[in-house]
Length: 493
Image 1: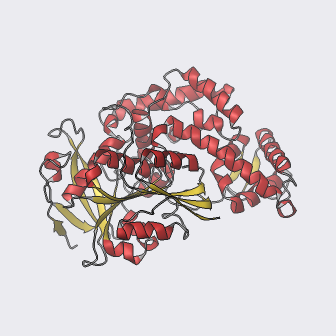
Image 2 (image 1 turned 90 degrees about the horizontal axis):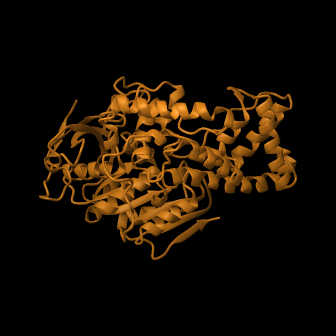
Image 3 (image 1 turned 120 degrees about the horizontal axis):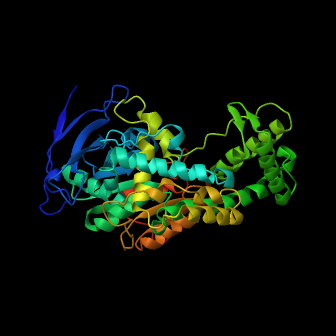
């Protein structure tokens, strides 16, 4: 195995990690089943930046070198979302989606955020049943849900209470700056998706002079962190559901769900009621009414959700079992869905606890969230109120979580983002996880940003999405030239 060393350049007084930034990185092939071009190294950072000489943790960092030494501009750090999602393989995973002119100009840099994957991973010792992230509300199960939330918080405090308060977005941004210095770079460019857009915005807030070209794909509103994010997603799901009823009604001859939007809506809720009485058979098992509502992110994908609902309706009427929920196209999911993906990706690494992603999710959401009630009854009231306003998923966004019983983070709550820094925000009009209103909130917070909206765009991911987008050319132009559009752009339709 060939090993290469990168000497770090120390910019005196210009990094949060002090000695941590002045280290030599030892690069080697990441894994036998990955290309040799994907190299990995370990960066050591303080657990607590308030005590830089104290306990340290490791960060796993990866890279694919720029394709052209002559054209090279710098490094492009990447984050897939989460929180709790691994980003170590991103340089290899995303390289085929990036055009040659971007790959020629940047070393692509991935990393596992602190506490995640191979970066000194944390765990709470949670059972599979305790690893749920979002759930529906019902009066009959509320006491059980509160007990679950308290148990998760207690287990996390007992197992990792010395580490979890330091797993914050602000500390991850500090880690990114240590990585910058260890790589010998004065500035970094960045591509962040979903939760990664908030991480990038926090880095821009904390280190504006070290931020270069910042692309925020499927952006979250920094003013909503984090309970507001979940509740806002539920409101977005209702808007997407209404759009779907209109689309399906226009295709009643094909799908048979109803000739008007009102009839389609009635057909869906009749299906939910039937599934509550008699679960609907699918190829992978059965679905209950709450399972159907929990699939709310499907409704932005008109072409796949409609035949699925039609098949469920037919199954409920005694037909063949319906297919399982269609796989959603897109890149890494937000925090409410990162757990399964990260756990699956880390399963081969016995050092990573199987509840690693969930532990990291709650550490960030609960530790730095601004508005988690401490009274469980407030969650009950909010779930009832939100479901009345947004019947599809309102209670899911407002339901009780471990945050009701969580220990405080090591610092103040989430970082307030409000600056004139430059960034390019990419956004699909119909995204069930990072909604268009959320992206507009990020745009307002970053006064120097420009936003590209893909009219009619579906799904969670634009540049990092599964197919070319009309926004790609603008993003590539910005990454290769550093020039933002003169004004906001709407494309597609």
